[in-house]
Length: 269
Image 1 (cartoon, rainbow, N blue to C red):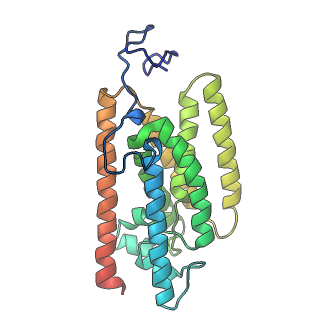
Image 2: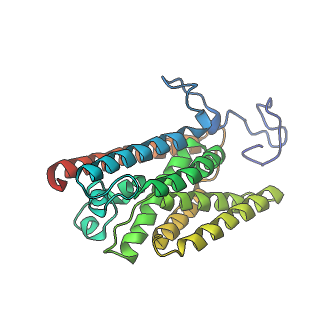
Image 3: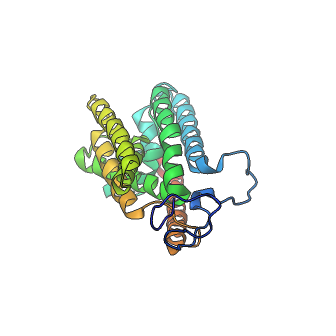
């Protein structure tokens, strides 16, 4: 599909026959050589890396909780989760803003991480294919921040964790795509993910689910995805911009993890 006029063209076209727009490789189809090329599917790279980080933190918090005698893999205690960066409004107000990011990579038990990983493996891969790696991670991180900001504001004395804020952001992104994409395809995509949203919000009505984080993530993901749009040809200025946004997002995530580590090693123990 031509990124300019949205007409259907062949994969061999280098210039759109309808509007004369240059057509290059889509951002999501770039192949950058790396030591792990061929091991992780390129279109799902972000999704698999996020899954690995989530499971890494789950194992770390499980072992820490068990060694402290406060819990285990099935149910990680609240103190451990706060030590590792859970969203907790009093600490955020004290300057630990990085918790709005680190909370999205923590999970409270085996069932929690398996459920979120199951959804992320499917939803993350689809969002990555539609929006490309750069936009997908920016949406994921922004949804995490807006979700936990809403959570901290709504119930400030209750710690909150989990990838579900970002997952609702990805649902919002796919709904935004369905709204922007005119025609039957957009209508079907929009309808499909609106149903996902309804199921998720109904599930959120259970007492132990953080509805505020879900709604905050949904709004953040929808707004950023609607602004971002989908990838254009590789040389377009929009792609350069979003690659820059993605690198800033990665750097911000790294800074947040570093801040969590420094706080953990100096004050949490």
